[in-house]
Image (cartoon, rainbow over all chains, first blue to last red; front, side):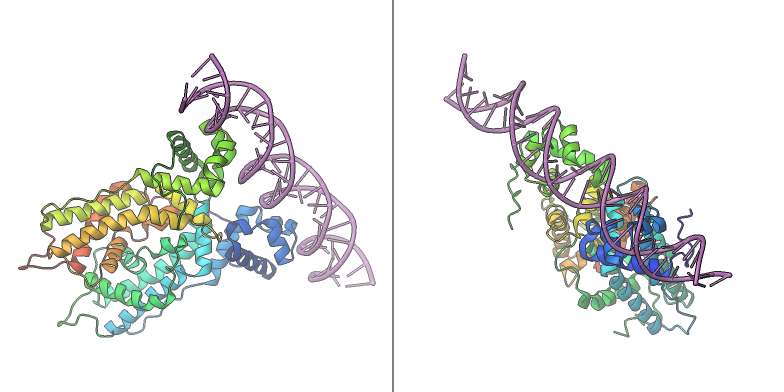
Length: 219
Length: 219
DNA sequence: ACAGAACCGTACCGTACGGTACGATCTTGT
DNA sequence: ACAAGATCGTACCGTACGGTACGGTTCTGT
């Protein structure tokens, strides 16, 4: 269970700079461009330091994921007063953020990296990516859904199932198609409309109608 | 537009056997295990033949995708009489098939391969995979939805959007998590329940209620 | 039967990568 | 100021891969 990167102070500033450079290389040229010699040259460090800090190449990849995850920490909103409009707006925000994150260059590059390594037996990169990246998103959404349920705005028998349905309504098949590099799929200008539609559909499935209020009043 | 593999008779039986062996290697050890020398040894052929048949390694990968896609041809049901029960059953079948295909070893291996190559600039593998694999599925679902709409069983403003929603309801985030190799995600015994639930939700969103019939009578 | 093509097995080449070693340089604690 | 450790740049090693070449063998058309 100990992957060696649990301590948020694991990395010195110098190491973080090197990891950022590694991410940069990964973005520009994919996994093939991320060689130890290339990284050492680009980051002005020695290969010896790389191996001292990260052990081996797999350790470097894991460190990159941990490093990137440590940069984007999702903040959970405090318990403000939650009416239907605010709740729906929060869901739409979540949907937009989710599409933005999944469609981002860094996320796509790291997911491609982890997926490409997933065939090898002992690769923990995929688990690490889910653990470090997805669980934060899941937490935020779970808390949001739970708050909405407690306020009587939505109802569901199983929160996880409701969340996964919301996820599916938002992301559809976009993530895999973006990962595959399909042309014309990454269109951030369409995210807001997709987010609105997904949340609308989510309310149809899980919304609690009170006095004929359908929850679409903020469109 | 011409990828060189349009003709279904492109590959001789010998070549198809070699491509099957290549798939086998890919399944067992991922992309790293699929080397020209290893394939030549495993398939009892010469490297020279590999390069003669497929040009280079990328050509081999593309040929593998084309070969695999040529094996699974989705059949479109003829125009049988379609009542609500049959329509719903067809949707559930589609959902089950989709989960089964996406969670299959070959599909996962090829998708991992294409995604891993997606970072490189000139890689057409992703497009090829979508073109050869997904479009058949899309066609089948599109025809099914259109038939249901013409019979007045469902209604939608945009067929593509409705289809993508159905896709999202069925697949949720399972595909990416399977691609990442997350433990405990591939559970074929759960597919039927997931398929039923997704189709139920799809009918809530797009079903046409007649005389208080909600379309959930076959559960 | 025979010629020509296709094919197999193996050897070979150049390259590029992961990982290690080492002297030179820089930082840091006292 | 000075010593000890950290880091840099470079060189080096072994290996493995993509791709090519070639002699021997098998298939195929006539």
